[in-house]
Length: 112
Length: 112
Image 1 (tube, each protein chain N blue to C red):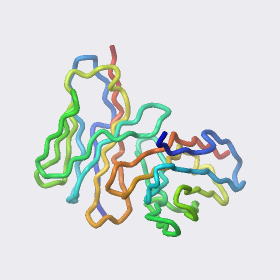
Image 2 (image 1 turned 180 degrees about the vertical axis):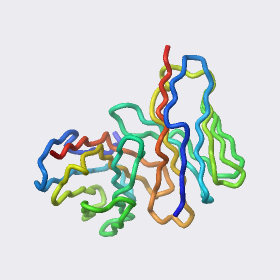
Image 3 (image 1 turned 45 degrees about the vertical axis):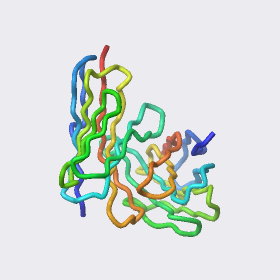
């Protein structure tokens, strides 16, 4: 089944404790991206990757890192999480930015 | 900086009513996508409109792209409880930059 998977689905952590949210797709997509979703703000892009080893900042990259060492995986790293990073996070993939985006199920992160 | 406005933000209607959601911008887009997101899931593509003035129909949903490709609307006829969800517009910028933006979303609740 073609899909985007994210792990974990739920995470409660404390300020400053490094964490990684994994994202994997099995559709051989070139383009992958991360978003955060907050009430009233819609989806805001954090980082995107046009291909392996090619990543770039979206609209809200501060406090986040990403890497794209393999085509299928695009992990989101929070080196020192803060409470303002409490949010619902989505990973998405597609053949290109202007194609249909396939979203993962989301990761709800709470930073206390 | 392009501005993107989606309205209304919230809509609560009775089953059988009609409604229209708007997505407006000051920028010209090469195309525009509409997504629907149900609680606990990631957004799913409904339609992509590409040509100025284009109208696409998906059962009771009618999507229109403005002649100048700066705005779009989603009209639902005879809304059903199954239409409940968050509707997001996502204009695609020219040049395939990789950056994607989404509207703030319209939360639709259709009561039986």
